[in-house]
Image 1: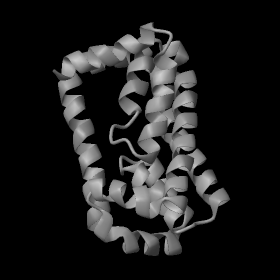
Image 2: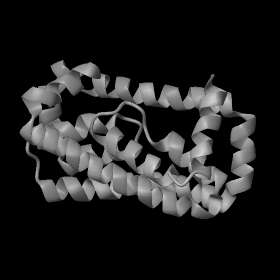
Image 3: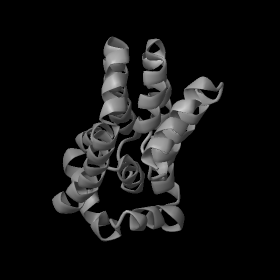
Length: 193
């Protein structure tokens, strides 16, 4: 099943909608959607390694704009939407602790969440709810999300075909590791908060 999903995601690179799908997935993931855009970014970049930096830019732009959407949800619609999203991730009871993190670390909290597998949307929504300085939020988001996605894009640009062979050969193991990192990021948030 994972292999079919992987092949389906790779198919987007062969359509004129691959870039749009990547942008929309990155946007949605930064504000409410649970699936990270890394899978599609890697699939698109591997299928056409010469475009990997372009895909990283598209993913970064979608993610930062989605982060702004998450910030807006927290700032304007915390009771209506924000708490429901935090509840989905099991972090509603950690809401005040997230506020303390923002008061103490501000941009660092956003930056760390933006670069690691920690669910970024939780931090974008909370940043808006706690009304952290928007330009600081935006700068931390641009730097951390771009660093994350351009690192992936650059590696694929430099090692394209050989990385594709590696991923094809070890896809199941890599998929399990990716899921472990994603779940581990969520657990880390709960543990630290």
